[in-house]
Length: 380
Image (cartoon, rainbow, N blue to C red; front, side, top):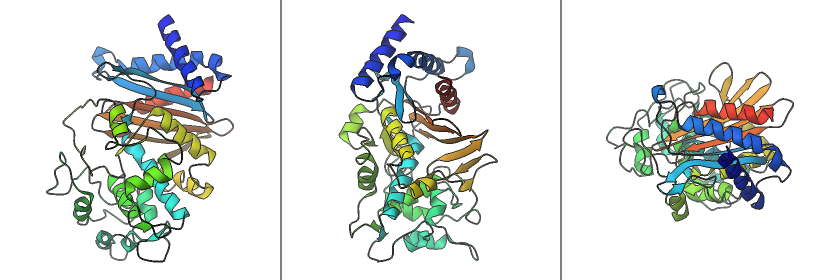
């Protein structure tokens, strides 16, 4: 316990010096940090009879109303390198939050389809932008729109569940080839009902590259860098091809032979890498109104695609309303990594954020761990 306390205080002092921790919160949150550490350590090392594998490395960041209360790493990021709050992980489907935000920014900035004058809107049909989409409209049905893609209500099949024929899930695939293959898909029903699909967010990344702002077009990677990562100061967030990201990336641990790991399989839907510090900063900037305009933030957190009685899909976030508490969350799992991002907004108190990143794929109940930690924060 003394070693755990010493580590907690040391980490807290480092965060204080970096300007990431409120000085007044240092003493009060020591017990919170210790309790959080116990939960994470226990989660990473389950009983032998549970059947769950141990997790090599994991990082956590927790905060309230934009103030970081505690951030740390547990285990190893790679042999001889301990996991820290600055360890970089692939964040899987948390990528969708950045893809959605970047596109919403372009719409706010009056982006137009390349070579045309008309600006795009949420209700712009995808077929107006991508030729591949002309075959997706069911006879007599409404067109698939940008809003349908954002809210997972396009009803297009999930290509990572049913990969296009003749494309190798274990190899690389150019985005243009993947888009051509998806052209053969057909919606499973009228747009409007929720069906989680990585296809939708891959298509959003392709749409962004067809849009011009002030006559200029950019790649998907450059748009996310400009509109989100650099603008919000997410200095350790980016893509695996970036040497800085690659150097800090935790070593992945695979539950099975890695699929959809090569470019461009997860473009737009699961190809971003980040740290718990940066994801917490993203949450804070979003909640503070700095990441998006008020109108576009409302789109992100909207009750658009109905998932179940309590849960909806907005744009890159699942949204639930229960017992006078709003929850905004998303999990992520790609080969070698698992992630979870949670914002809890009680009706009459400050919002709480929990970010968890792990270097193993298929980690079960990471959402339960996040909820337990959020309850600790709310109780302190």
